Image (cartoon, rainbow, N blue to C red; front, side):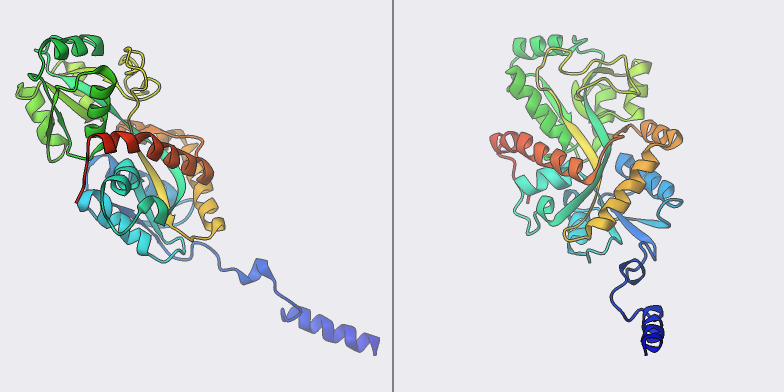
Length: 327
């Protein structure tokens, strides 16, 4: 009888009927292509970063399909991911505009900082203060002196109201007491750069791309300072705002990976670990740097959450002070 009972037990064990077998019951992830939503039009730094990440993940996670969903400053694409099934197959390439500015300055039904789960911060795109060579300012100190000596006569362009380039400009004015500098919002960086080169706009707050660095080195424009805590890998000759004497002059347009809230922690960790392995690849990092991007090498879901929370706390008073309202 004991032998018969043992045999029956072995049959049940072989059939998986003696209890749950987690290692075999869980579905493998990913089993189909992952969709990466880039909440902006094709072209530009965000699109380049998203496509570089997708290409690198092929060998680590499998196929990643990049889908551009621009509109409403990134809210369209961000909300699409927030509404998606939390199964790991819809990931957002989120930015400061989507995760920080929109939740604070708009009345959108989605609080994307709440409705999305951070996976990893890929890195940052710094903002730089760039002037036409005719402006008598070779550093931020001289720019401040010029602005104070010519109240109401100096304007600065940005990529648009509510962008990090706009917020960086307003933070600079607040920290230096140059509130008379007039903000001129553009619809994107292209026209602001064209007006800067032609001399129609003396000062522009710009995302520092490889194109901007090339213009600076050619002498067509003058890049006075960048808003990162440390100098850029791609432009080590350009001082930071802090080095130039403006304490707390830090403005980072970050890009990171975000999943719908409720996505299983195991999936979030798997994507984060694959991203970390990708970041360890020198060729991959160099592609990001060439796109005007400063890669982050030590992010994690927990670190990404702390970073986003810190940025919200830092920018909320600035956004409230300037009365920014996004419809």
